[in-house]
Image 1 (cartoon, rainbow, N blue to C red):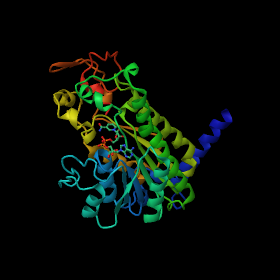
Image 2 (cartoon, helix red, strand yellow):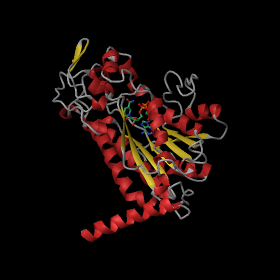
Image 3 (cartoon, protein in one colour):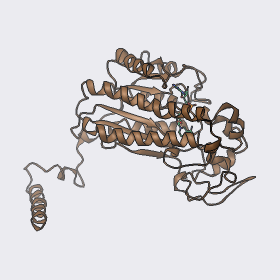
Image 4 (tube, rainbow, N blue to C red):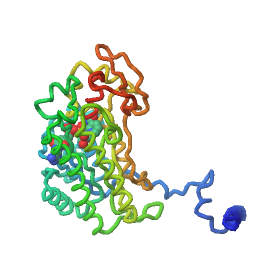
Length: 371
Ligand SMILES: NC(=O)c1ccc[n+]([C@@H]2O[C@H](COP(=O)([O-])OP(=O)(O)OC[C@H]3O[C@@H](n4cnc5c(N)ncnc54)[C@H](O)[C@@H]3O)[C@@H](O)[C@H]2O)c1
């Protein structure tokens, strides 16, 4: 033990002495002294130049915003979804201030960024052959695959329960149909597994990218859209919570299994974001209490999530993997103080769900977080 301590001390003194002598090669550590940051540490923008990205669930909400931002940062984007026209940005494209309307995402990208920079591929993430075809289509069109965002997802709330759900009545486990549980897992977790599986197969067989500033040759980036509910439970959404915890677990597993291959895998864990998935609730009576429950006093926007999704596939995240990234306007940090939110008292409305909660008492906020 003493020998180890002494050896380390000698090493530190030697490094220090070398720096002071000047002219000699600096140790890697000393390059980052107070006044020295190598120019190569920060590569030029745009951040995704010459990258190919697949985004599933690209026709709507978060997937649409992520696709547009990636394309603006230089990527060629494969916009994958059940249909090119399922939802839209629902109001306007906040990234540009332009009305996005119902223009399919790949067309919006071509209008804003340039012809040939995006393509639509039909995919059903429940179907393995469909996922394989999606990856093959990306490689055929753009030559390789650098990024996949497994983002397609559903709330798992059955149609017949939608109205009650919007008004704050979630379903506990014994009330949840096995069919809706299975479907939620099939899309939100199994679909993500399949997306990762076939993207990784491709990433492993293609030539890695050029060395980045820390000398790593990255093979690929995976971003899985989980949710805040991949980290904590909420009353009334057992299928969704299970599916998103699975998404976070899978993300961590992939991160450690493929770190040596330089495939990064991280998850997005947003709280309540204003998208078509949540629009019915937002149009309802709980909009105000919902907003008030967020310390930032606003709901999330798709762009808020897209910006973090950009970071996670850029060189800025070159030493980041296995992270469930919380994007929540501070909700997770609230301790669930009792809040007067108009007619309903959102007792324990914390996203972290740390306080004892009763499905009957908890405001619609928690249930809606399951979206
Ligand atoms: N909006 C939120 O508050 C929120 C919060 C946390 C996490 N999320 C997650 O973010 C992701 C995107 O959600 P959103 O709010 O943008 O929802 P959205 O409904 O606007 O978009 C979801 C997209 O997924 C697609 N999709 C659904 N099933 C599919 C399938 N089987 N195959 C291919 N595509 C399919 C839909 O067609 C749609 O375009 C989801 O995984 C969701 O669980 C959303």
